[in-house]
Figure 1 (cartoon, rainbow, N blue to C red):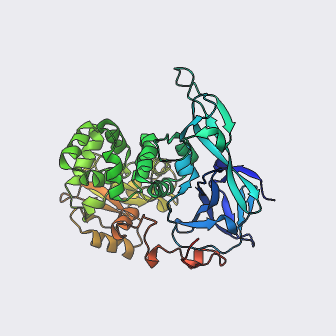
Figure 2: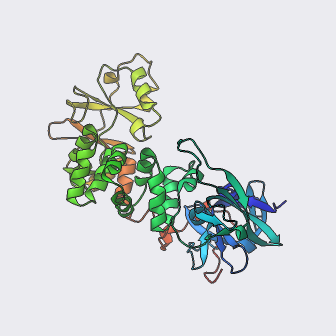
Figure 3: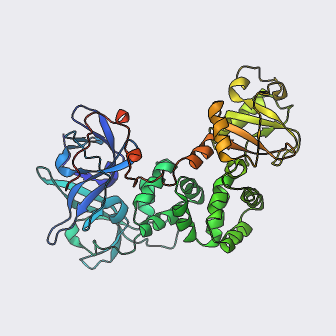
Length: 434
């Protein structure tokens, strides 16, 4: 049964199904248009379908809204969503906006928006959930909340400055790659506002999933101290790639503000050509001595913050155990560790068939080796056979894929979702008006 009133926060992330029960995507936002003498009318939903493609689903194709799901007629136009003049996204643009109450009681911030079915198939904005400014100096103090109708507020439309705090909360459970796509879909000013609200660690994770141009845009709007903190939280290879995009003077200034150990790693990576093994590698693999045991190795790869590709094997070297290490002895794959008792020494389990590559090896050659031997990581050594880092499969994919692979805006056939991954009832419709 369709609900007659539902708040936007309850709809974002909801699954969209066709009449046969096949899931075709999930809701990312609600699109409305303004009217002169009435509250905004809902024109449809922005839905993410397989392939992270954002498409428009007209409200006329929605047969049911409720119970945490949306049912459609089953025919969805897979043309990439493009926002038109006069349209506004509730979550991305309306939530967080400050308004004035017509009764003269002051300002408030929109924290949620309810839509309601006015007539069969006709949905409108019916109610706003507002929060007044906090009443005390305490950082834990919160302003009072209230509900109002659209007609009871002023300045609810227009592109004035607005807080992004509530929008950040709405997307708190998204994976970094998904949040990066959400930010890239926002107008630039809104994207910068949301980025400024993210924690250093969360922003670092998101920047690692963005094209370099967008990374540089966001970092360029942060003050030096905040930018350095974000770079500290990034993987050294990603931080090095980002700093390489900045003007030399700013890059040096940020390196001077970073934690010394992190800055040293980044400076080290910047000495290598970007299309070499040294330019692709990360300087933070798991490094142990030959006397370390299987139990110790498994404990190290069990750390939750470790990327899966880095956890696939441990590197065994002579001391010291920070890159550049002592002489590189070999790698031990985690699957092999699982076959031996916990007390077994890792020095006896080395993969003797895996040869490291020099830091000067071309990225193309590294790609060939990974593909030829079905590897997910490859050790990198210097001319003295000291371990300096590891190239992982995701580093190589970033290099091989086109520069705009993260963008959902690409119009070529490669950006189309695979027909095998989309239910049969989600079909390419016409490219005409909505």
